[in-house]
Amino acid sequence: MDVQYDLIIVGGGPAGMTAGIYAGRAGLKVAMMEKSAPGGKMIKTDIICNYPGFDEIDGAGLSMNMFNHTQESNVEYLYGDLTSIEISGNKKTLHTEDGSTYTAHAVIAATGTVERTLGFKEDDMLLGRGLSYCAVCDGAFYRNKEVLVIGGGNSALEEASYLTQFADKVILVIRRDVFRGDLLAQEQVLNNPKIEVVKHHIPESYIISSDNKLAGVSFKNLETNEIVDIKAGGLFPYIGSDPASAYLKDLDILNEEGYIIADDRMHTKIPGLFGAGDINDKHLRQIVTAAGDGAIAAQEAFHYIQTLKSKES
Image (cartoon, rainbow, N blue to C red; front, side):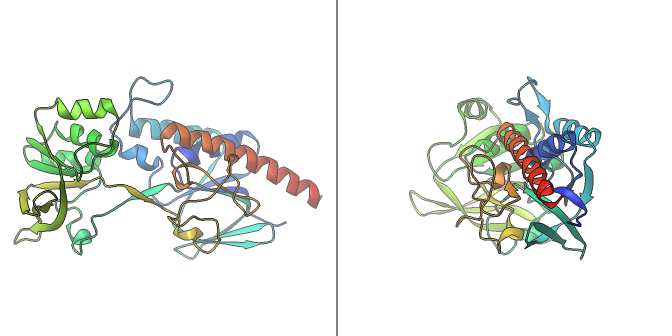
């Protein structure tokens, strides 16, 4: 069958890059498609302390280490924003936003998740004007200011702690009275004098200045129903994420939330189409589990392609 690649990996996070390393070392003609910088959420993470072999490493450094390893493994890098995958027999055709098409015997979908917004009409307008989803990227812009962080999971706790090296004060707002993050992250927040925790509040609307910048957020107190305005120079929402799977919506391999339904060998119901990493319906989403998924998916893709080629010869 005339195709450009044996395998195309969609997504350049830890799942995608690990898959590329394994596939390249197995001798496949493999490409990795990514619409932004390699690393996925790793590149936005300040310090990583739970990846085996490193007591502590910054996210950008680990991302670059993995990417360099893919290049040493002969993985071709394709810059593109995938819009759909067309299945024709055993051939997979990938269509990108700029009109380019790529073909392969097998595809590994490893595009992870994207951060949720607060859902207010001004979300787009305020981006970069006081609203940010990346403390590592933008934290330094809020030096000597007060900033808000919304969320009670690990990301919110870790980024709140990170922001204290720049901001005078970090106000961490959660909707319940307990955090969802792990105990170490909780202790770091609760023991940091620059962090104030506000419980039982949910965001109602943005407070916007006369020059159309964020000036704060209006919250609803869930215990009293009172509306409380909290002024701040910056806002970092960490309220969860959704799977980046729009390009798969017509293939009947997603659950109701948009995550890929795959077995423990990363197979979907479509032969030659695999899922790996945070985009899969799974229990634990971590760098190390994404990397494990990528290794399994690449190995399974290798066996699938070898079987396919043996039947064609």
